[in-house]
Length: 239
Image 1 (cartoon, rainbow, N blue to C red):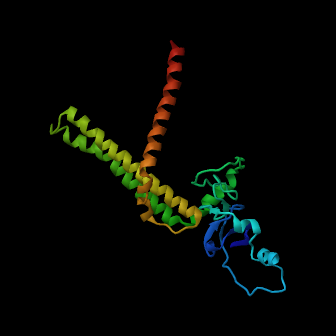
Image 2 (cartoon, helix red, strand yellow):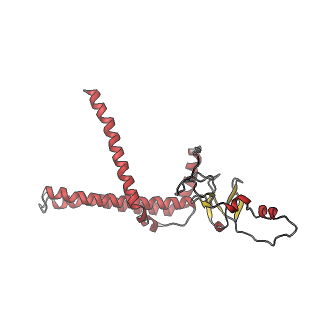
Image 3 (cartoon, helix red, strand yellow):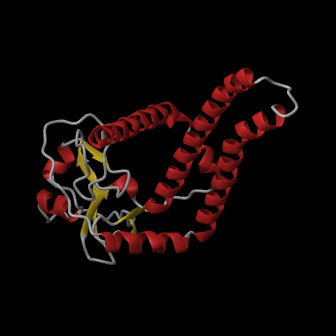
């Protein structure tokens, strides 16, 4: 069963499944947070045709027979193997069937206004998460150099051993930074979706860590390769 209702802010017609009743979601039209209305059941009128009863309940003949998947951003219903939400354009993490991609125009002004409004509404959470993130990443990033500098002047460790120790410490620092970055992204996504969140979600990125490390490594390699491809031709032109 599906629920159809209008956004109270932009009057856009929205549609989602009945199990989303009472859930807060972002309107794909204006981006404002709306609450999916509760399902009201009424006694069927025997004088009405079955098709009329189905239409009044917001259920179409096709929708009731087709498997649907819900968008995690707006809660809208999509075909089972859709890649992107047809309501808001959100990526759907499922295998994609046959289909086509149509670009969606993006305006910076409304995005900035929406982000600033969410930031002001959740100022305590945003500032708290940002402060914890900054303190922890700064401490972990400075730990390897501080440890090496404290040992080297007292000759407690030779330069070769110091270099060998610096590598695993730097690796640990990199992994920790990626882990916290995942958590920070999850906090901000939950705020954007109108979902409850807190500082505890800053440490909830464990199941995404391996993939994120691979992406971070690939990004670094691509950045270095791009830099080299820009520098080498410049050097050759200078000769």
